[in-house]
Amino acid sequence: MKYLKLSIYTLLFTVLFLSCKHHEEARRPISQSSGTFMKKSADRNKKLVASEEDVIKKIIKSNPKVKYYATRKGYWLSYDEKNTTDTQTPRKGDIAYFNLEIKDIEGKIIYSESELGPQTYYVDKQDIMMGLRDGIKLMHKNETVTFLFPSHIAYGYHGDNKKIGTNQSLICTVTLRNFVPDPSAATATPTSNTSNPAEQTLKPVSPKPAVKTKKDTLNP
Image (cartoon, rainbow, N blue to C red; front, top):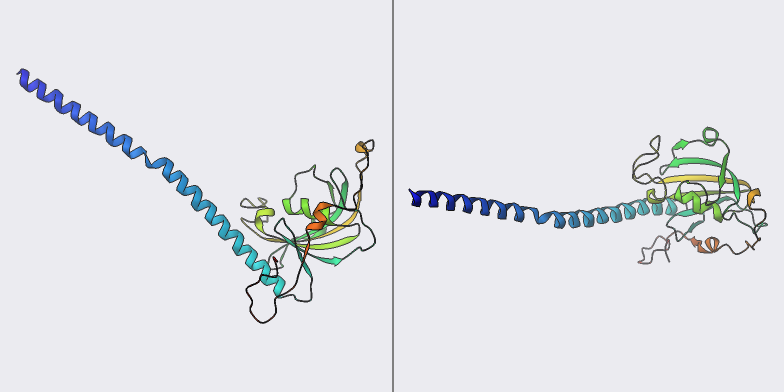
């Protein structure tokens, strides 16, 4: 009888031990799976950015008469109306007054200028589209600029929860009517704004010739 009980206890202990060991081993791949997921997610994002940039480059190549400029922030712009007289550009704290029209990458209007109405923006002090936040600081008064924004510096994965969808590249046309210093910062020491670092990041983009070359003229 004692032998039978001992055998039963031994069997139960063995089953319990093996069950716990199997459970621990089954949990090991969780961290590995998490790392794999992050790597796959990063790879997808890189492919998405590359795909959107390819579309934008094709647009640029299809408009050889329009001079585009590449920026270090990863977007492109062209001047519809250029102000070659003024040298100042908006800086942090200035109040910028502008008009805005937003199109999808195929040129279909998403938000018209009349629908959005006049825009007022406290430079670098308000939460707006990342591309516009940077692009406005490149503009001079009374200029009209068309920006080509990949989704990662537009509204990204979430869109604007209205008309702009997931991972949507945008064409934004901005007319900077005026910009003035913030009255509340009038006591601050003025600094020269004639050498805006952001303005120096522009690189003219020339369309590729018909002969194929390895050099990408969009990003020299």
